[in-house]
Length: 579
Image (tube, rainbow, N blue to C red; front, side):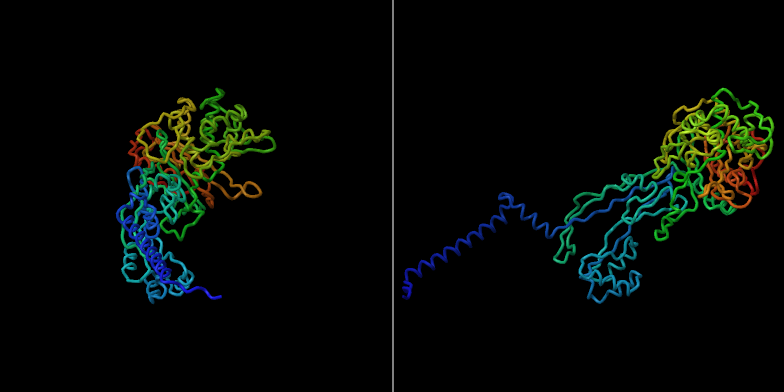
């Protein structure tokens, strides 16, 4: 049965329905347009604006200027210079026919560049050159090559180069502290980056800046306690010492005992932080704070403190060192020769093992270890340098006879050069131990902690001065025009089978000037060769030359009471063998 034909009435209703539907839809469209154009905020359509921004508005970081690092006088040690990082959109660059031209502008091998570009064919970002100079960047960006962009950044530059490299440290490619003080104070140095917004086109290219959201906050500057002039002097003298002795490495540190400021800290081998592609990880080590050594005879003045505190000895007390050797347990400890009956002062002057051993046997090892602890050995110094080691003091469950005496002459414990200098600062500061710092301070005299009496500190200073006299083991540490004091140390290095007979570490720790002690310098010469291997021969002359510069730079007044005061000031000492 077939369907009934449509009537004119049903066609009319269909037409009216479609017309009404279209009119309603058109009316809704007009209403929506009015709503979007006139009353967006009234009708709460910020959502659409946000969606549009997500598709067309982008944010970019405004790099912050990393804080300046200077020495105590304002000389720059680390600065940030403006550079440009070049990058490309491979999808725009490939096919332009200018790929080879770009490689030539960047001084890159064409074949390897084209191969890399091919690997990034499906990506929209590829680094071309990090930290390029503005001159080269302008040439590349103005070449008309499509898909090439630049971003402003900062690159760290170190004007003093290798002279302060281990101390100041380095930053990584992204400008973050990677070593040294750059890492220790990274948070305050780096500042806070800013933020700006821009509108991009369909291809991701920026077409218009729409304003800065947040200004960049530059990093804080850092003024160190280091004096670059003295740092240069230390670096020069350590180079000279390594050349003269054939040593594998050398270190030196100078500090102000009154304020706790570290005035110079130098290590060799060193490295140039401005040549990132040639960094030697071993040369980056700051040996003054990270390397530990048995201090040898340089701790005998600390043993002297324990002896004086015991009341059993004074510096004029006589000790019989005959026959020039002493047996402790199963080991014989010899002196270079039989000194006979000598005073405690002469025991230190001659670095008599027999005399120090007899002192240690009388007062006991507990009192010696106690003095070591009070003077800062076995603990960090407060300088807060990354990687600083605390060293180690002996702590045996059972103390054999030899264990009880070896700490007295510097074996069986480990110290860093900085710790040793810190301990000697007590003698130069009337018995007070002041925390060390690498930051410049306005204090002219820090109170510190009284760890030994001023009288004992004064007696030790007197003995240290005698060590550098004609009868002492460190006469080559003397400084023309000034009275100084100090102590030598020579220790065997340790190998897999024990102490090595032909490898040494030569040390010297000294205080100057004696009439008004203030400056402490420790010198370490690692593995000197030949006959010039002892502390008196290898390290003491270096101390002398460095201290001449310390006293000159710090405007110290010459000592009129010095025996050789008529010698020309700051004369250089020669080479040769020594005790």
